[in-house]
Image (cartoon, rainbow, N blue to C red; front, side, top):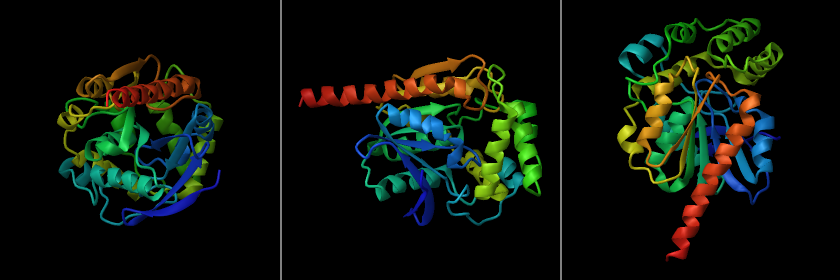
Length: 298
């Protein structure tokens, strides 16, 4: 696919599109420090084959989107909950990208921090979100979704100094947080890490992302007001975002479906892609069924 850039919300966002122009629009939002390439091309193609026009993009401070400025320290992020920008800014980036692509509303799927952004987008811009799929994420309630001590220790590692150390650190990280039931091949992890580094690794941006997560308020009350079909997918063995975060998200959104996946940690194993794709399709179909019933009654 060909990467494109667009001005959105005062910054430049890099994105790619898969599928036919008249497909159902589906916006994919990646998580903490992750570029759009963490949505594997094969996964995007599977969604496109099911009739979606799939948009993946680099959040600000990742990949080839704008690298932001502002002090990025772990102490302010974790203890003071300060960040140069907020999850609301990241959600507004997503809305502005839809504007730039002339998409009035889309089905939205987010993973980890991307799930938090997707939730925030649905709360702030309800007319822009047709359906919501929140994967291995949480509500912002600081009593749920907490990482294990080992996962937190891994998250707070010093930033690597060069390409080789970046690759090795990423491999170690996904050995800690990955799916015990679906262990990743080292070659795949190594290739992903190399691509991420070469497209523009941004350790300071990852800390700013962490600050935005820590500074975010509890979204539970906003989620309770949503009136869209929603699917919550969470790994039963997730050490980075405890499964309580997924359960809380599903409880908060009226009518949400919860899919708790045995053996899944905090990653998206290829073995589970068909399950994810079917869930996203099922949730989008629910949204269109609701829209059709509304048309029939007016």
